[in-house]
Length: 260
Ligand SMILES: [Zn+2]
Ligand SMILES: [Zn+2]
Image (cartoon, rainbow, N blue to C red; front, top):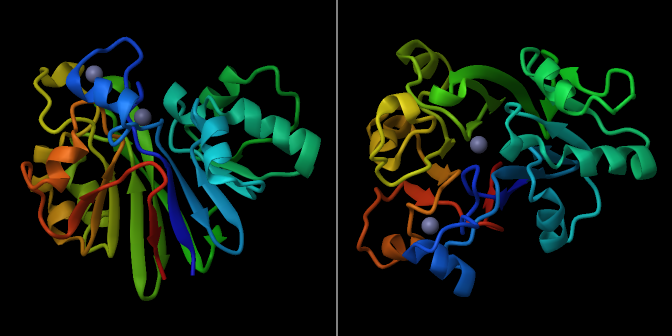
């Protein structure tokens, strides 16, 4: 039975933001309830599969005490999701010999351009149709990422359980939502703000208020929000001052969730 390990749960800037002295960033430095590293998810089962490897990858693996990662899936080519690839490529070259790395076809040239010094042939492969992990059929689908372009989500299906990891998205077309995201057993969705005040042309990830209105969120049996900025104060949610429906919870770094 695989376990999902939330290696990191922050937006692109981390919490605290290194330049910010707001109340939540100050709390994150001192006691750390809201301390979050850049978003990444580990599926720990027969094999360990990492989704995204951001700039905090090294510290995250040290925190969790992992020695082995067997494969990597990438959602998109932004810094907060790929900067740990340097460490993973070293691990592959010096320790493992091989480490399958997959990304959606469209994302591959963007990632490779950032790691142009890597001379391994075909080190990053398109997510093959028919890819299976821990008994789940793996598929991927594109989602809009607002001002930041596009991203991909990963979907995992077995006959009795379906779940989706979608860390970076906004304004998902209804057709995409209906085709890939309805009636899930578990939806892990990125929500950068509790309520984001900026105009839509500058935004790139749902806020929590918008997310709660999505048909995908309403129809999922369980929802976990991740990719959260310094706008989200987990203390207020645990004290009941900010409320979420019973099926919905906030991720935190190091959180574990079982899937069948
Ligand atoms: Zn991101
Ligand atoms: Zn702050």
